[in-house]
Length: 217
Image (cartoon, rainbow, N blue to C red; front, side, top):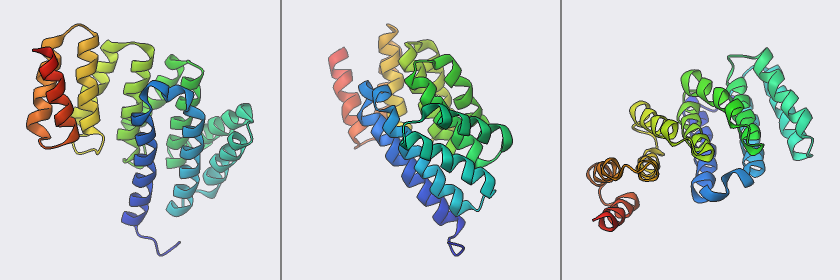
């Protein structure tokens, strides 16, 4: 694996991330009921990425042990391994991966307020930087699950400002419009749908935005 370039490593990680987020997007109403599956995929991705990146083998071994615990159903030991990774390898890529997984585990238990700081820290400082939009996307969904639509709107706007080139951006726009609709702000929702039509023409999201605008007339 020592012949693998940085760009190849980044590509592998992004493919894992895109697959994970696709599962969330396509199963939005069941997101927190399939979180165990998501955790397993994420931790496996962490293990592979850790090895490819030659990070400290202690961090890689610690987070891979979390994966093993989760796959065997030992949630408590899995969480302990994640917390140890964060504590002892605080600023490493493995620690930010651990924060993401811990946030998912807490979200599954509906401990949303405990999950949010892990995601917020990863959005701000996550390594590699490709982790940051993924964390921001999940943060938006945690607020959505809490039915805290004020903060969901702020999280969506923050994502749009920070990660305009992310492959997730179109879905974030659609969710922002949905949050405005739920909040009883149809004019704001219309503006977002119009932005989608102008920014992402000839896409599935543009078709969806046009459908919604037609319903709102």
